[in-house]
Amino acid sequence: MPFETDGIPQYTKEELKQILQEGKKTVIDVRTPEEYESGHIPNVPLKPMQEVEQWSQDLPKAAEYLFICRSGGRSQKVAQFLKQQGFDVANFNGGMLSWDGELTSGKSE
Image 1 (cartoon, rainbow, N blue to C red):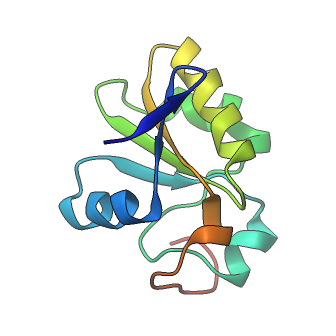
Image 2: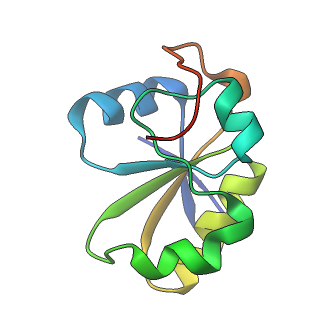
């Protein structure tokens, strides 16, 4: 059961692993392209925080989203911004610094 920070649910790495297996939320990495290419969770797309106002226009509001960054700060800001736009959002607390699961490298598919 996630805890909340500023009204945004915060998920642990164990909870994220379960979400990735179940596919119930859309997980999005909001780091820079350089950070993403150096190592990211397989099948998690890159949508850089700097471009959130552009890419968020294409997100379906009916879906549930969980955001990831290096430590959890940028993804929390993206989640807060999109919550204000009416999206169902959550944050990966601890970010990629706490991730101990599978990683892949290279550009977003």
